[in-house]
Length: 183
Image (cartoon, rainbow, N blue to C red):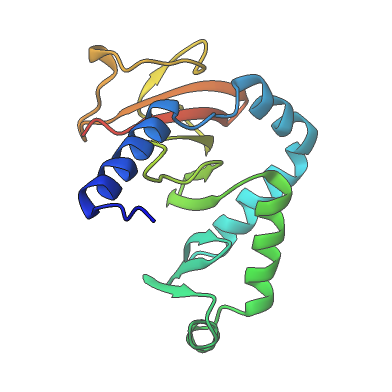
């Protein structure tokens, strides 16, 4: 029986990770996101209205909530602490249902006039790139593009935080966006 040395195992892991990163993550196309929005526009509008109505709610995912400036997870102790703060578990259940139905991974209230709905979470394999929907009464900070599919960071698109935020309008106050971490 052959026993692999730790260096051989580490090398194999690095080769696999390099391969995985080079393949990247398949992002949803602009047309797929726009079609999902058109098919569910009333539901998207309702989600934004609900998020803006819950003024202490800053962020919601399937597994965590930021409420009144504190983070809570879905563990029994997290749910108990969240309920003590005044956010009912059933309300979180409602948001989770809406996120799943719309294909949203994370909903963030950016400020009083903007909501970000990420369809991808950042991860090791996403290389700090993610796409989603943006709701705002005015165009988001960033650069407007005709297409976000296949976007490559351009010097003129670099924002003050060092990242690249590009967007494409899809309807009235709704945009599809792409963020590329510049670090």
